[in-house]
Length: 390
Image 1 (cartoon, rainbow, N blue to C red):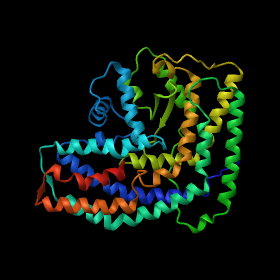
Image 2 (image 1 turned 120 degrees about the vertical axis):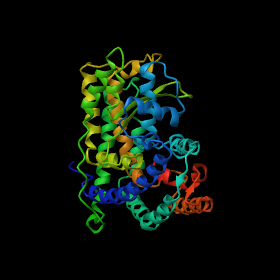
Image 3 (image 1 turned 60 degrees about the vertical axis):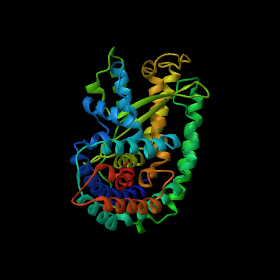
Image 4 (image 1 turned 30 degrees about the vertical axis):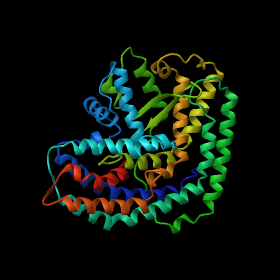
């Protein structure tokens, strides 16, 4: 079908560069505040690849997990945090609440416990930052809204829901149906894209994003989990996690893939989602290829679906069918909300709400500051900067 999204990518690339330039400066200010009180910002805004010690600290402070029963639990906890912060564009209100409430609150709680004072100069830096960059967020939000409409993402979301990433009883014919619906969706997108004069919109050359080949990721996952013990130091280097979530209503265990690509420094969750979103736009055919490969393997009986799900999640991870289906759904889920990385970081707040509240928090911090200010007095000033970076 050709590059369906080719005209869109330069426009979203412009939005990425504009938003990343603003957030890079914000990250610099926020990270210096945490650094002044002795906190590594990477524990709060977790990069996609963690060393074991950093993963342990991040899980302790941001997830409240301090006791690990074996290496597997440690690894899953680190990936769980990756998934919440840096992973795919999960349109789930509970995940959004974790990003918006739980993680931000934990970061601020960690800061407020610090004993050192903070230089009050950062308050003026935040004020200046708003003056320079507030307009960027409204402009890029408008671009992302256009992209979301043109790409019929709500329709793709409905298609994606029909792909259960757990190896139940899906037959090759089911994959044929899903692939047919995807091709129909892509034809609709191609028609809508052709109706927009993209050349009239601001655009730039996309960043050089490496192709994250899902086949190689499947092979890596199979290799690591085929071992008796998970090598934490090696497995954490893989920019992906597979999570098992058991439904309270059906009892079924769903597998979700979290694929993250590290952008140029500095690295923080909002930038990762933008960067990864561009990757999905450029390599969207990976999902179709993964479904085709899975169907062919099923037809040749090289892999089989199982209905035995009372095993540990790590036994599930060893099933190639589950891994391949989870990867395909990960690509489709992310593509169905690819513009979310460029929109407000929450369902409940928009930029027209965030920036006035951010100014209000800054004024409150100024009233408590002299040359220095106590960490507990800057929480309101940092709440929304953290939310923007999250």
